[in-house]
Length: 341
Length: 294
Figure 1: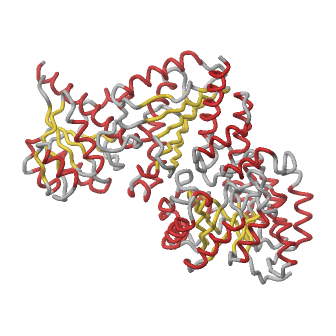
Figure 2: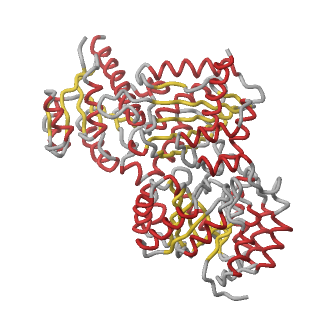
C-alpha cells in the first residue's frame, strides 16, 4: 500500500452518520469501524456527536454513548489514522476540545455558519495550541455569495487554521457553484482547501470531483453514505473513482468495500437512499440533519414533512436551529385548522 | 414620588438604550451618562437630552459621586472588575450588565427579593434573562431534572465582544439555569442567524421534569403567569406557541421583540438586558425610598 496521497480523505461516518442513526453509536461499532478504516489506510476519521462536541442535547438528540468515550475508543485502536473531532462554537466549548485532545484527538474541525467565522478565533487558536491539525469548516456554504465565503475563509486562515472547507451542509450546491467557490478560495488562500458534500441532489460525487479538479486536496466522505440527509460522498466509491482517475488517496479499495458491506451496512437502520425528504433538503437548501426531526414533527402534527422543510428553507434557517422545526410544524398545523373552519 | 438618582457608565449601544428607558422611569432619575469618548454618539445624545455628561470615565464620576446612588455598568467585563471595586468603596449600588459576574446573578422575576440590598448584582446573559424565568416557572411546580436553552439571535445584534467570547455565553447561561432557574443540570446553546431582514430574538427552553407524572395543567398555568410577569418589564416578551409536552419533556418557544428605544426591535437580546436591569434598579429604588420613609 502506498502512502503517497494526492488527496487526503476524512471519513465522517462516525460523526455525520450520527445524525442518521439518532446518535445511537455504541463503543463496539465505533471501535470496529475505526480499526478497520485505519487498516484500510484512511488518514482521518472523524468521531463526535453529529452536531459536534457538546452536541448531545434535547435540541439535537442525546447520544447513547458519551462521545468522549467514543473518541477515546477510536483513538485507542488506530495506528496510522488520526482521529478528528468537530466543534461548533455556541454548542461545544473550549473545555470540551481540551478533553477530546487529551483522549487522543489529533485534528479539530471548527465549524461556523458561512457568514459567522468570527465566532471561531478562540477555538481555532486553542486547537493550534493543543498541537492539533486545525480545520475551519464553513457550513451552509450555499447561503452566501462567493465573495463572502472568501472573506470568511480568510478570517479562519488569519486565526491560524491549516485548512478551510467549503461545507455543503444542505447538499444544495450545483457543480458550477462548487467550481466557482473552490477556485476563488484556491486563488485567495495560502492554506489547504477542502470540500464536504451531501448527496441530497445526487450531486455529491460530481461536486467532489469538480472540487478536486479546482484544487481541493481535503475531501470528506461517508462510507455507505452513512451521513445526514442522503449521506455524503460515498467514500468507498470515491476511492475507486479517484483511483481510475489516477488520483492517489492511499486507501485500500477492497478493504473499504468490505467495511461498507460487513460493518457499516448493519449499522444503518435502513439503506441510505434519496427519499422525498432528503431531496427537499437539497432543493430547499436546508441543513441535512433536520431530516429525522422534521419527520418526527410531521408525524406529531399530522402534516407533510416536505411542507416543514420548504418553509424552513424559505425562512433561511441555519444549522443548529432544530427548535424551528417544531415551531414551524405547529404553525403549519394551526394554519391548517384555520383553513378547515 | 421621590426618585433615586442613577448614572450610566458606558456610552455604547447598551448604555444609550438604557438612557431612553430610564427617561421613562417613575422611581429612577437619570442624572449622568459617563463615557470615555467625548465624540461618542451616546454622550452627544445624552448632552442633547440635558443629562450631565462625563467623558473621563469612572474617575471623572467619582469626583462628582453625589450625582448618583445607583450605577449601571454597560462597559466590558474587564473594565467592570475595576469599576466594581471603586464603586463599592464609594458606596454605590451597581448593576453589572457585562459578563464579569462580580456580584450574584439576578433574574428580576425569580430572585430579586434576595438581593434588594446588594451592592453589586450581575444580569447573567440575554439568553439567561429570557429563559431562566421559564425554567423557574416549571421548577416551582415540578422539579426540573435538566433544562436546556437555545438562544437564536440575529447576526447583526451580536457584537464583537459576544462573538470573540462565545463560550462565556454558553457557560454563564448554563450556570444561571442551574443556580437561579433551579434545574439540577443546565445547558445553553447560542446560534447566530444572518437572515435579512434580521430575525427577532428567539429562545427555546427544553426541560425534563422529575417523576413519571407530569403536571401539564399546572405547569402551563405557571408558564403563562411567568410570561405576564416578564412582559411587565419587557413588553415584547411572548410565547410563540402553546407549551409542547412529550412524556416528561416540555418545550417552550419564546420570542423577544425589543422596545426599539435606541436599538432596533429585532435585538430583543439587548433589550431584555437593559429592561431587566432597569427593573432591578427600580425595585432597589423603591426599597430605598421605603426605608427612608419608615
